[in-house]
Image (cartoon, rainbow, N blue to C red; front, side, top):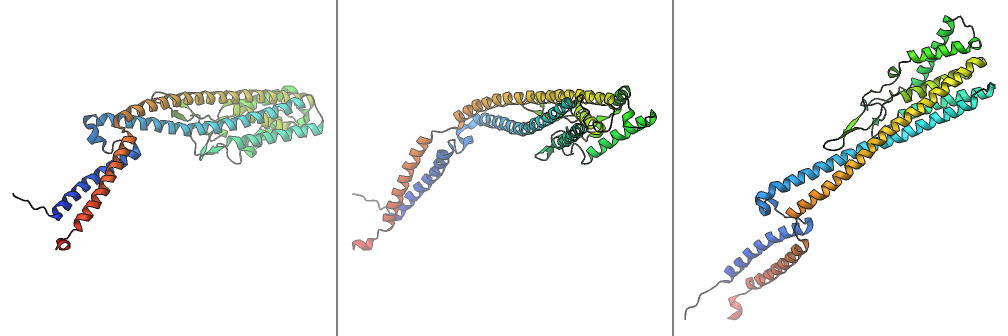
Length: 342
């Protein structure tokens, strides 16, 4: 009978090799149990790896577009709020002008003038609104404040200078001597010469945002609009002429013209709100479509690279038990000594 000697060292080394292999598998299974995907996608999928990469890239691209849309949505939400405030300011002016109609009481005229000035101040404040460091109504010139800080002083000075020049040219000594016809002529001439774009720092070109692969929409509005211009004209005319000592005929023309400007301004601002609202609706629809696409793509991707996490956990637990057993046996083998049996 022939016997073969097997050393305890050889046995322990063999078991250590087995444990090393098991530890590599454990690392892989731990990763898969947590992520729910293959630890090494390239090894598992082979030639299908490019397909999984295509899915991942497309999903990431769509998520990036949705994230970009969120910035545009924030800008438009801020614009809508500011436009609502501007429209409300216009309505306040319109109500004051309506109440003034036919009223020649000095105190009432002063209240109307003060109200118009307050509306102008509020308008400039709302028009200079900035969100995330971008001025909402400066068009593409988002880094430039829409109206200068001295805008109100400058525009009222310009109006009063023009009115003074008109009176001088027509030999009118006092505002009370201005007739209704003359006031109509002056206001018409001033509107014609009023170069609105030169009073703002805004660009006529508005912000455009690509909200999907095939769709680009305007996501801002510009202060160079007729609505903004008419509200300024209404406010300046009412604030400077309501309490300027005009005769009843000229004052009636001022009231009518300012009321007309205020009404047109409100309509113009409402149109701007509608345009932004349409873009908001289109972004909502685009986001819904892209989210559905992401769901489909991610489902396909999971089908390619996904693993059964429960199965991975069971295999992981089994391997851990095996390793613990191997460590225990190896320890006992290494502890054997022939001297214990002599």
